Length: 142
Image (tube, rainbow, N blue to C red; front, side):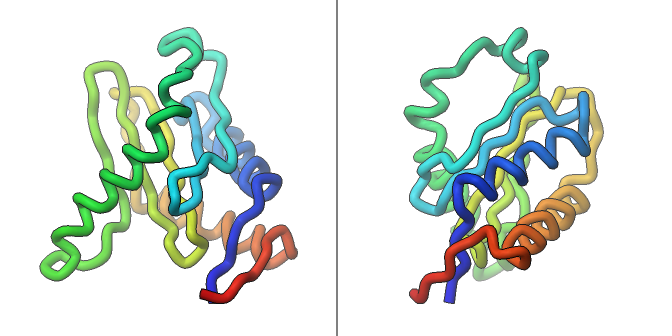
C-alpha cells in the first residue's frame, strides 16, 4: 500500500520547509516518482540569482529520477539512497527520495550554507507523515 501526496498537501509541505529554513533554503520542489511536479516554491532571492527556470520544469523531474536511478546502482553494497547532494559553483542541490510516499523532495540552498542533510531529510519525512496523518493524501494499493 502506497500513500500518494496530493498537490495541495505538497504545497503546504513546501511552504513549511521554506519558512522553517528561511533564508537558507532558496527553492523547494516536490515531485512524484514519475517526475511530475506536485509543488514548487522559491524565494525572491532564488529568482534574483537564477531567474525563472522554465527549463527546470521541462527536464527537472526526469533529471531527478535519473539521478536517483544512478545513485541506487550502489544500493546492494551501500544500502538505500537517503539523500543526494550536488555542489555547483552557485549553489547546492539536494534530492531526498521518500519512496514510501512516492515522492522526491528537491531543494536548493546557497553554496556556502552548511546544513545537515540527514537531519533535514528526517524533518521533511516527519512533515510528510504528519500531512498523511491528517488526511491530506489519497491511499492507493500497488
